[in-house]
Image (cartoon, rainbow, N blue to C red; front, side, top):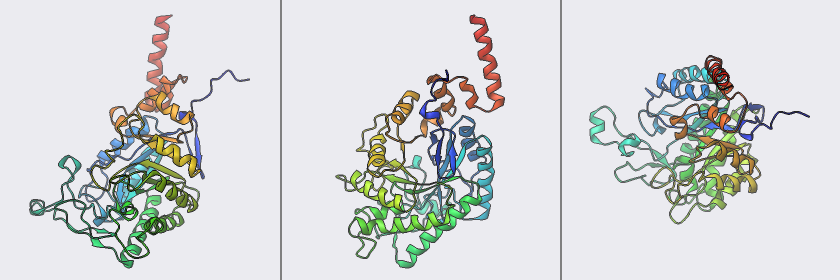
Length: 382
């Protein structure tokens, strides 16, 4: 019988299709508004690279657009040109050289295009922006409803538009693989185009892509079918969902369970659980901001849709994250702002959970020196 303590679940490998994650710690997508002509820069290399060095199992890049005109801002990244593929490849090579999996999140802002950055309130671009070389443009959406006052009215999508947006996601999925990513996530939350179809607030269509929940899911499900076919069968496909949203809970957790079951049937491997976005802030302000506030959503979907889930939202402590996994509430834990505060969070978590030689979560040029410091301390205290 081994005397070795059981490995914490947080640091237990997880296999999804043909890919094995070294641990259950995920760096969640964090938009930086720092791309140039849609290309990630040295900022992104350092921003994302330090999380891989810190010991995370999966490092997501930020929400990345499938086309130039589907970006939220002029400073959002894309993956619709070969130059962008090359720029991302430089980053994924580094991430995966540190033993992490590089993950892509593809998005299409739909009606939420042509804005300023969040620190400018996501204000719609206007005349002053146009004078500075950044004119606004109209988006596309299931129905011609602007996302806020001052925004241009989006074009109501016809059948050709629907086919084109699906084709853009397929092309982006192929480029994602060429760029060296091992996980692909489609952004179906936070008020972007898939959620615009899902929500009765933004989808007033009278055709087969509107009406009841089956009609409103149709666009997203067709898109995911096409992406799953284009994405390698041995690699996992994630879907980010706003599990609840809307005034009075107009999109409910029950609805998300229905959606998750349909996505699972179409080859989606993990539901990434978030909330909100159709109106108001990116995440629904009615969800109390308590530690792990999306975990109950992940737990319910994991149980009722019988598929893996990922939880995000004020997960900051090692024992907190381990507790969610031990309780069977989710399969992966994702951190964003806590990683900004402490990019070596996985190493500190390993120490907090009592793992032997937690420094070994770091690259050898760090781990060796830190272990030497611990050896000196141990000798001095003997």
